[in-house]
Image (cartoon, rainbow, N blue to C red):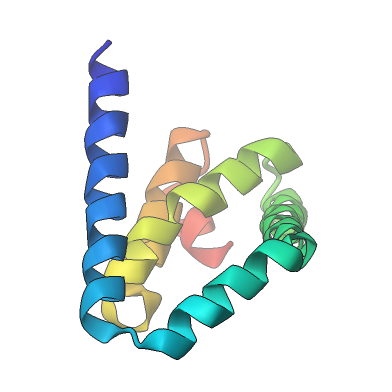
Amino acid sequence: MRLRGLLAISLAISIIAIILVLFYTTGEETFVRLQAIRHNFHYIIIAVAIHAFTWVIWGARIKVLSKVVNANISVRGASNIVVCSLLPAAVTPSHVGCEAVRIYLLSKKGISYGDATAI
């Protein structure tokens, strides 16, 4: 139940932020363009799919690199590590937070900190 509450709060904050940004930064042309999205919604679906596919490719890269240090991580596990490290990457300059989280999560999979840093 706590997770659902936190999810509801995060969605509410996101929706309020989107509304505020639209309210303070839009003109008539913005709403015309937003309405055009309804007719081309498949492009958004394709873009999201391509973006998710890049996470899988990134996970596959981590899997290959982990084999070099004699560790066995699945592509799914590596992709999960990639996705979990994206928030710190987004809020720190030059994606510095991404690397620290990725090293920590790899170490939780049984890889030494040195090998996780190399990966």
